[in-house]
Length: 60
Image (cartoon, rainbow, N blue to C red; front, side):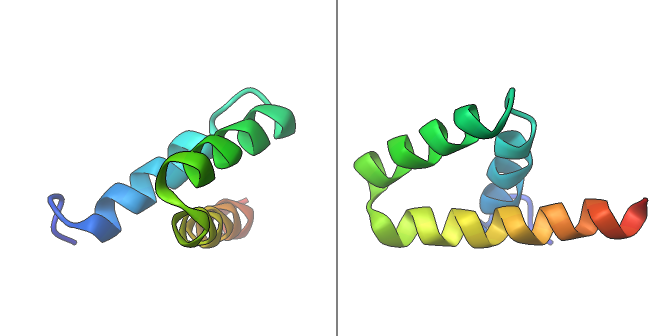
């Protein structure tokens, strides 16, 4: 994957969100994203987070 692409940025941001200190922190971050970038951006990030979450679950 091209490390200068939007897909890579989204994947990295999803991993970042998963690394935040708990559910409330993740929800607050998503609310912030929605406020700054809009609901579509939040939904895209939520989808990317689910992909990363599933990757982690499968690797265990």
